[in-house]
Structure formats: C-alpha cells, structure tokens
Image (cartoon, rainbow, N blue to C red):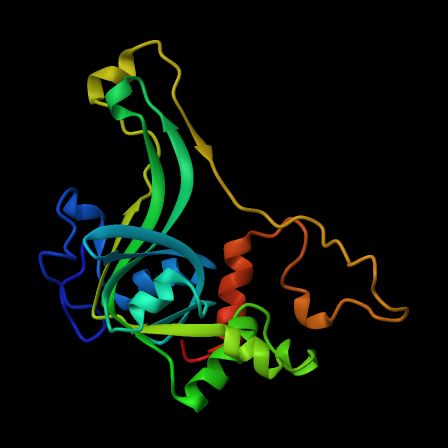
Length: 241
C-alpha cells in the first residue's frame, strides 16, 4: 500500500510520484532510507549544456541528507558545485521471475529515486566530518586507526551534499504472478533469488607481522549479505537513524 504524505514521508509531486503500479510506490522515510542504506553505490543524474549524464559513485546518508564524493577535477563535481538539481538513484535486484508467458516474466526489486539540489561542501567542519564519514559510515571507528589524510589528499577530494526534497521507492516482492488460467498450463515457472554475498576476507600480503584483522570488521564476514553488513554499520555510526 502506498504511503500518503505525513511528517514521516517525503513530499510528492508529478516528478516523484510512481506513475505505473501505484501499489508498488512508497514515500515513507523508513522504506526509502532502508533501500538507500543497503547500498554503497548510487547513480547521480544531471544535465550539462543540454546533455544528460549519469555517474555511478559511492554515497552515504545522514538523516535526510545524501553525500557523495569524487575527484575535484571531475566533470560531475564541477557542474554540481553550481547548485544544480540532480536525481540520485539506487536499485537492488532481488530475484528473476520466470512465468508461464513472456509478458509476465519479471523481477523482484527495490529502487529509490531521490531529488534535490546538490551543493559543494565548503564548510571546513562539514568537510572534515565528511572525510571521516566516507570511511566510518561503512566501517565504524576505522578512521581512528588510520594514517591521517594529508593536505594534498584532502585537496584532491571534493564532497557533494544534497538534502532530499522528494523521494519515492518502488518495490516488487511477489515472485511468480501469472494469469489465473495460465496456472493450468504444463509450463515450468520459478523465482530465482539474487543476492550479493561477501566472500572470505583476503588480507594484504604486505601486512606487517602481528597486524591482525580488527574486531570492528566482524560484521563483514564470509557468507553474509552485503546489505545486512551495510545496514548494521549504518546504525553503529548513526544510532538515531
């Protein structure tokens, strides 16, 4: 059931409303944030001189604000420093759905489109927090044990932030959904789950003697779903969501 506007939902407009299959549309913070937090990668879409671009990049969420980073020389960041309107998307493929007719073949998925105005992070305190959050959001407390970033590294990295003005999620989670009469046909149908699962850690071969894997990385263990590890890490770093 779609969510109506409330203090716990994002505002909607024609640009963000789910047009087709309204029953799959959600606008509440919990659904939108849960889908965002299950990913490290997003795609940021924007227009430069009439030409559309879509750039994949790492990102993270802090409340209702999204951050992403890149090289200070990148076209994307140079454009978004001007306060451009952008659309950021995240999508998860959860299963392949093989039905009894081609039209009903489908996929189960979770996706979010978030809209807002991007700005370059120039405030020294906000940028310092972003330098730390870029690592600690995914690997809590790791920054404290690392070599500090030097001046050149910080200068070469820029951060873009965007307050989410509108956002919509679209979710399909029903598996095979054939026409009633098609269930009587002798045709094989199935749902094939799709997951991103962590492999066994591979320590750097140049580790110094006595350097072992920190206990703080225990959440990233072999066989675990990546999105579960990412969600747990998020709530360690941001316990209030």
